[in-house]
Amino acid sequence: MGINIDAELKLTETLDNLTISNLDLSFSKNEFVVTDNINYKMAMNFQEQRELEYKLEKSKALPSLAANLNFGYNAFNDGFGFFEANQNWFNYSNMGVSLNVPIFSSLARSSRTQQAKIAFDQAKTQLTETEQKLKLQFEKAKSEYEYSIEQYTTSKNSLSLAERIENKQQIKFKEGLSSSFDFTEAQQQLYSKQQDYLQSMVDIINKKASLEKIVNKN
Image (cartoon, rainbow, N blue to C red; front, side):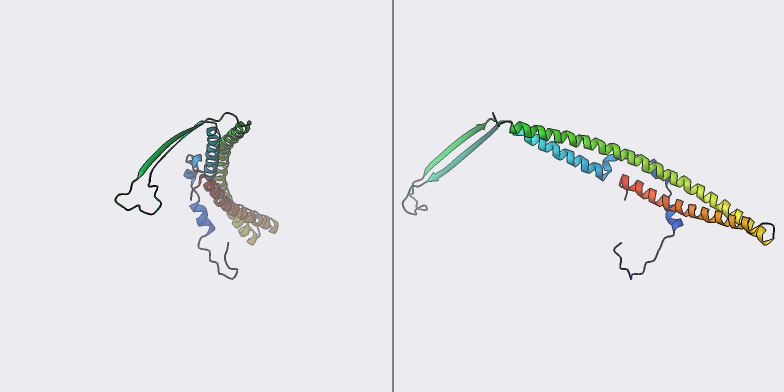
């Protein structure tokens, strides 16, 4: 955590409060926008990169037209007299046009273009796979979160029942109406339900965090 080992830590939240704050079934009902996920955005950027590389290789097979224009003045003097009033100036200009038409490149250009196309197709496939995986992950995380809430409710009810049973067995044991074995068994059952209840609260917090990670909720 990056905290000094000698630093004093103080918990400001209880497990009960954290659990209640993470109980939000409406959150899991929201529509999953896969394009908001960081992994999808990375896959999309990669596809766009491959597409640009493919277009670049294709463009190398296209003819290219270039033009240039030069214009200037010369004096043709032996000395420096450029600022004299009677200085004679001789202007010149030229214009050139060049057309480059690729005809043969030992099949290297075609090979690079095909390789770029294959890489582009692979990137598109990867994007589709990423989208499907994210949707499956969302459905799985959503199902696990909803199930953790159901388990929390069940564990809470079971704990309440175990507490009542243990309390009755304790009264019976003190009054001599129940054996120590029955009382001990009721206590063990209570401890087990307490552990299940604590675990159900931890599960809600963890499952909610997993679901938020997928939908990129801060």
